[in-house]
Length: 303
Ligand SMILES: [Zn+2]
Ligand SMILES: [Zn+2]
Image (tube, rainbow, N blue to C red; front, side, top):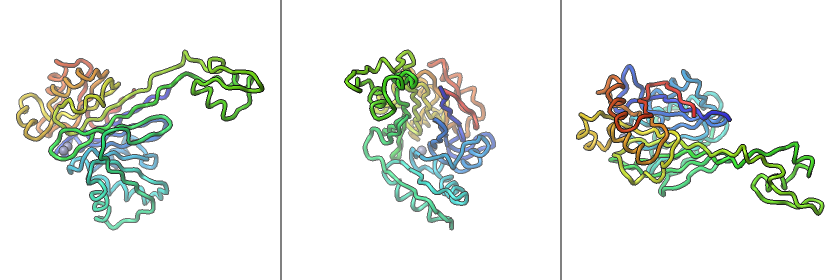
């Protein structure tokens, strides 16, 4: 089973610091990369970590505060220079189309490939690929802001090609057997269990990305049972009031969300420049939820 990889390209908020680039996260699934947000400096962070912008088909924007977005036109310019010739799919909240078009008109650049923009106006599944789906849902921030859940499809079991070939030739009936349906071939019924090894069944992995938000039950249903929950937490306890005023979470609040939604692991990101070290946020979060880390730039996690 190939691991899913998460790469934290930038883990800061507001303004970049020596330690932290601004927010962007890359996810790799079966050789394909997906980007969540694209702050300034993202493309150099991608180069450092081997995240391929030519194998990036999707970019999901949580919202358009500058610390999540300003790397986008530069990334598109580089993609064009490298003669990308296949579409890039962009998703974001209401207003995405206008923002993206304005951003792309700023720099004089060639753009030889198609950019398909989708504004998410209703929570639910927004991408359906053969191996995974992506859900989008609203967060509670001062501007429209989305969270995303990457859900890998469950594996029903392993198809035994050699066994199948002995029973019937390759063709559409194989697909039916893989889906668990019995088929008829030359008058004989073939049952799925004759060609499927159900001991290899596996539940799909789930990774949820919750960017700028007050902690709120409005998004809990969408992130339930995540293998990895990535949750923003700009602040430590001592700035709880400030977090509330600016519609952000504290590390402890993010940890409570992880508990309430039954996450297996919590990764905290989007840390304020006020916090030079991770330890304060990490210690406070750990009092609520044991399996937590505060991400540093270029950290990689395999799931
Ligand atoms: Zn932010
Ligand atoms: Zn924001």
